[in-house]
Image: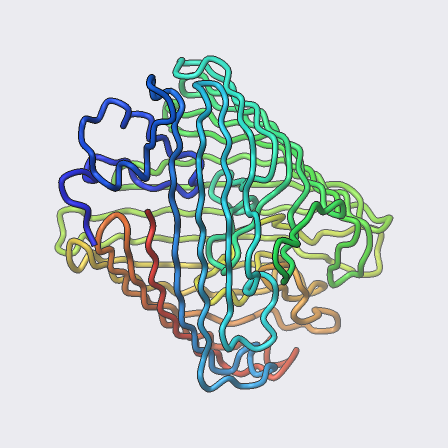
Length: 445
């Protein structure tokens, strides 16, 4: 799977593929076939060039007692496949166009949604104009369909876990100056539809905001401050349905370098929902430490989250927190529960068994934060109402995974999850335990 003699000096692939920069290959004297894919000059000066790339992923999943026993049994499991192919055209040092196609297919998946089964779409298509390219201070103006990713992806994510990544039609201005970055945007969320090239402009969900990052801060290391605005024509919670206008103000302190990492974040939300005022919040903590001097370099982690839920469905205020556009696999690849109305404690341990083989295990214990609110899926769909149910304990989820990174381009992951249904699920529905097994193979180029 390797590409000897050339690719060892290439940078790692980015979560946002449009952030990859292969202009340094202009000075490379080799004639490797992979170089011709990543950097194909279109002019003698090589200031104009085109770069190609892609992402191919296949997954097999088997679920016993899907929906805690509410769904019909599928004894054979199902296969998901996803193809992402892009072309990055740099017409000059200032002007650039990025286009990416996405094909997501579901084979034998019962009642597959458009997030799983979306045959072919223009996933991204935007134009950049960059001021002062190559300088310490520069600005990018961007217009078109694009992926958005901010911070830890708790609120704005590319949705890598599900089969179909998400994107937005919007305008952005991005300013860099040394350790400072500011991003201002206005967009419409692109809703997935199940036919070919039908993910058109969506006027029902508008999303805007500003995200500010300051790096290399004394003691704190990195600070994010942000404002995010959301308008939905129709939103649904346990308290009812209606128009939603929600504002989110958040702060994050984090460090991802060295043996000890941490990520602390808090968000407050306000606005209006169906004539009611919104007052919601969340606070999260994620800390980890890697013991490099011990065999297998164990890394122990602990996550904790408090996510507000509605207190009383009939009053004039809504306390249900809205995670906006979060990671799809928020609590593991099984993606059983979304980050609404929760209190969870999530310890984890990872071991580097071999240079390219890691073993990961974690346990997530979950409770409803408020008795007056229900349990939600990752996409915000209400799974079970919380009305007239006093039980808060949802259950615990134990997951284990083996991850083999063959090289920078190919990896395989096998995961097993057991969800032990608690008192709330047993009262709200059938409450059967869930067994989930999955295998993922992914190639990037």
